[in-house]
Image 1 (cartoon, one colour):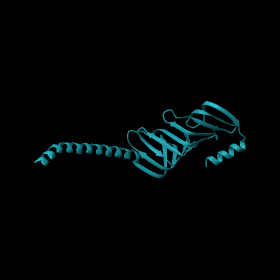
Image 2 (cartoon, rainbow, N blue to C red):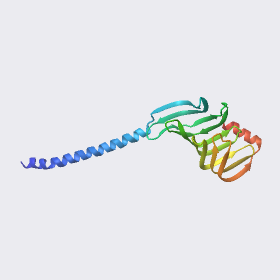
Image 3 (spheres, rainbow, N blue to C red):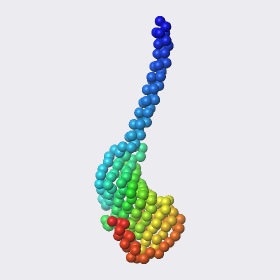
Image 4 (tube, one colour):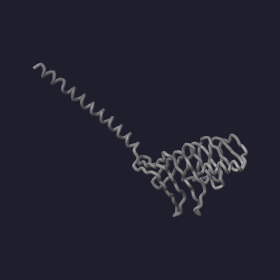
Length: 199
């Protein structure tokens, strides 16, 4: 009699503990599941080449060893092993090229509206001018590239460096926000460096 009374009194308490434990476990499972979903790409490809066109004219070609596409609150594609992007003018001629060890592009539903290049970023324009930095952003709406990081620009005549940069997307016009120095460069040295780094 006494034992059954103890069990009767303990049973509601034990059930309460059981359901509380279940709620905590479900919360943990949900948090782990949602964290896992964020890490897994919807699509993944190796040695990917993509062409971007506007009014049936090819504007850019992107090559990357690996591309991962993610869907969610923000749709984006990631190039964790680097990328090479070649931009073309209206006549289909190369305007400039961009290389980086990492890239990420954001899709607004109508196409890529912003791209970031990170780590060992190199841009070379049609004249052979070179831009080197660690982080560069391209904005499709403004057709500009910009950064607030350290930049170095090498032209046939000089090397200029400083903090921050704004430029048009073909890198034919640019402005260093906080220039810090200039060094004159011999033509021979410039040509050798350009040929080596753009291959």
